[in-house]
Amino acid sequence: MTAPSTGGPPADAVRALGTVLGLLVAGLAVSIGFGAVFTVPLVLSGATLDSPLTFLAFAAVGQLAFLVVGYAYLRRHGGVPIRWPTRGEVRYMGVGLVVTLAAAVGLSALFAALGVAPEGSVFEDPITQDPRVALGLAALSLVLVAPAEELLFRGAIQGRLRRSFGPVASVALSSLVFGSIHLLNFTGSLVGAFAGVAVVTVGGLVFGTLYEWTRNLLVPIVVHGSYNAVLLTIAFLTL
Image (cartoon, rainbow, N blue to C red):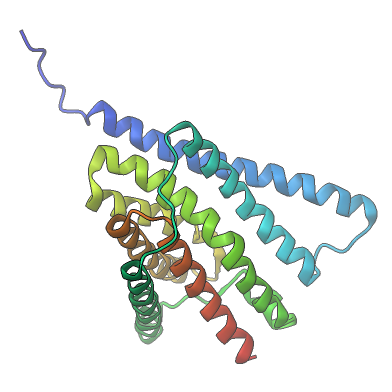
């Protein structure tokens, strides 16, 4: 005799969401730990904590934490597909970059017209004080930020969600998680911050879709890194 349904969510779906939450908590915890390890020697040495180089170092430390957590999870759960891209995948990269940039520009213009655009970001002041920070962040995006975030959010989180919810829902859910983790990047009103998160989430949808289409993590890594680098280079040139 079959037991009656309790109407609750399937156990595997609950486990998948629990895994996602655990990965986020682990990423933030490791980031705080790495930050503390990095900060203490600077404080003891009397070094300034608000220099451009220190800002870039802190940014790298936080992304390194995501890289470690994503790698540790995937090493235990079968790894992630990553290989040299085919010609078709290179075309996907080009189209994906154009779509992501167009979506970001279009949404930013829309939010500005509606009066709900983000008022600023945590990167604005350091870049304004020293425009070279933008170039440093661009380089960091290519070599660390994009690989770390794609490994965690697409490789680990989207991969786990796919097994329980399928490809479409996994792209949507992982993109929402990806966008929400950037909430604290924006300053000013909460409405403006959510507008900024929306732009990041749409970028996540593009990266996640590319990953599902190609099953090659290098594709969203290149598009993500190039997208950040283009925006940061424009910021440098316009200051």
